[in-house]
Length: 316
Length: 316
Image 1 (cartoon, rainbow over the protein chains, first blue to last red):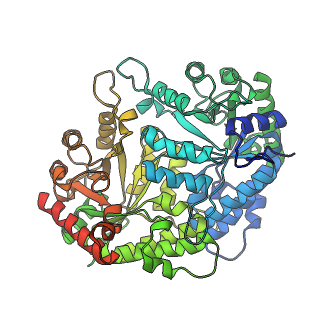
Image 2: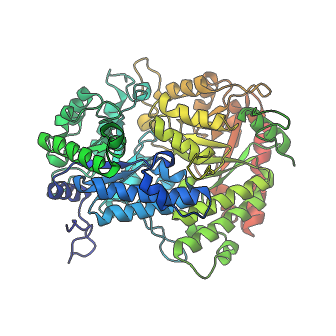
Image 3: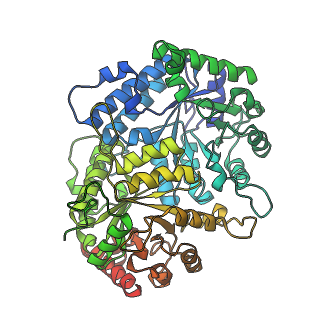
């Protein structure tokens, strides 16, 4: 597998749009499945616990076990996926060793030919948003030379602070052929509290967020998709149809399948602009598949990932 | 200086409300000034650059210099302040060494008797919000023992995902006598894009966020203030008056003074419920005071911090 490089060979400084890289990778791997990596140190696969050193403080030992767990999960389920989505909170709670573990996991995913979607839902005023862009997409200039960032392929972004806060993340990503996914309508029950508030014209707030995502995206010349995506929960199929009307060329990141009740069969509207129009994320349903299906964790994860991959691919 | 402990001596498991701890600390230090720590590796004080080891990769060297810069800033301006507000993005962009630097800075602030307000503006679905609470307020249970978190006294929180996403952060903080500050109306120009959108009843969206902050707070028995605060930009004084009507007992974190154009004299409404009702944050105006006033960075920072402290204290 030779992944589409960020910078095409022979070009001078030109970067390939994230949208085109995404579409290529989806076609190559025949998959829209995104493997969520939300490691809980209390629920790791047994083989990962054995990998932790007997020495070190609890955070360092747990971080080593978390890295081993994610590596095993990527080895098992990765072949059925197009990307991984590490949940930054789960690494941050292990401090500096957690950040080292995150770097190892990103490297492992890349070796498997997977894109890396960093799920941190960052959002802040312009100077700070630019610092987050450096953290996620790097590098940061320092008097000692450039400090590498996480080098993610894309990141989730919270748009509550408005366009001037989102722009540095969109631009920081775009400069390296990366993408962003704006929160538009999330999958949790509390999404009704703010995102569904009716505006003066009667429309829900999330439709304004959808317009922002649509405005900010640049369309890749080959794929016809935009490099600014949208997080749209898979739990309310009616939202998906409306979201596609408002964002005809936006890749959707679709959380909520499995543990949160969303069903793959309800996602057809996501794929209108092509197979890469919808990315189906699943984490607990894959990592914990053996708890329902029995058997060895890796084999159960592989089977569940392949089942989800086939179900999504059949829709597109 | 003996700071109010999180757990009073002789009590069994009882924690003191963040609101009461904050009010005590403001009274002891006669200050509502919060020192923002937004270190840019390209703009550190000269003495801090000299502190970096000649060895190591750029991130490790820059992180050591960042820690030295923040320590010098805390030593200079800390005596005029009640808290520090590290901007998490600025540490995250230096990877694992950045997280180590952040831990050093938190420790240094605590030694100076300052509260620590972690500015990360986190917000995510319930399970993930709980992981952020562990990262910020700790600890995280692991099979190897508890992994310590950052042990911040408070953290900024983004409420776009609704109450079920905010609650785990509020509760995780409260369990250790910590606080949260919900984004209600931020200080950046783009805040109009989403936070000022008019709802069906004609009111701006941010007023709903204000009601959420008001609902979620628990009032400390001694201070009469709530343990859920609100971020309200200092750039539009009219908002501050309205915000105080909607949140009569909520501590306000007031960014935007100085570099963003807000003036301390316009903040009087924040202090209606008492001296701890408003926390004035300043970062670039203190760390970069020597660029305007001339002289040695530490002396200029100390003078500017004392000027801001006096100006705010005189209003309350």
